[in-house]
Length: 353
Image 1 (tube, rainbow, N blue to C red):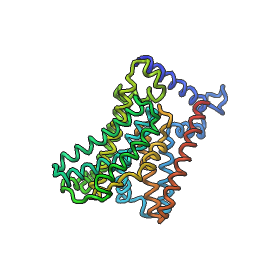
Image 2: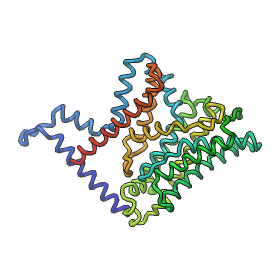
Image 3: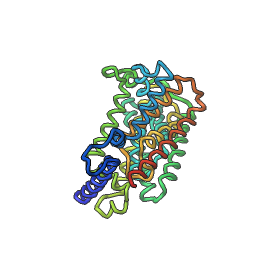
Image 4: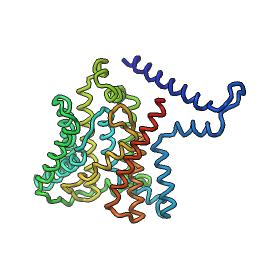
């Protein structure tokens, strides 16, 4: 199976390379033997630069001009810190989208796992270390339910995760009648108050999550299988992959990561809010889409997802610095999603030409 897949990948790569050479040579007479002009070289360079990275650079340049406070270490560090939970959830969401699914329940899963940990600690007297583990288990369990509903239940992922989103949000409110729980151990609060070499610990956890996911997708057969499943699940099944088991596993990972994001949110606030994370779904999906992932599955990666996170973080941070109304900020994010999708579609059309 690997030989056939690698041959297909190499064939596609050589085909793209052939087009690049032809494009680079456009405008050069066949008999001159001279290299491409500056315009051709620039076009080739830009073709190799990820589109989201160009967008990130453009946004950062614009905000640097508009605000003298933007391009400072403290502010950029805040961008990472304030979006650590979004980034961790986006890793799970990207994996789900990669296999052709979608998970609308990540925010509610965060809330339910966090409230479960806090309720067990405050009401049942369970040691907090165990409470955290149980909260992570709850997140994985929600992911497992999502996976089972969308595979064995044959329910569309959008509908299945919409249902679990509603159920998880309701359970999070039910546990404490909608009341927050405050007061956690010092070691737990240290997760978001300490740093490593000047980088907040929560940012380190987020970056580590991205790196682990990137390594898995790049170097592990089970990770590379996600691309095959997202590209064509039936072909992947016929080639020997256990598509059902892999899909369920991906949803479990997404649920676990949502719960891990809840650990960070609770530490940051020193409080468990029953609605924590429920408003983050737009940003999580925006990160993945702006990062260039195809909602039909089969394409995407952690590098571009991380760049998408930076774009969303920088946009939100910049709008705050410029005193843009919070009511208008979701409008800007929505426009950014549309621009990203249209740009990605145009780029794919050029590559397929």
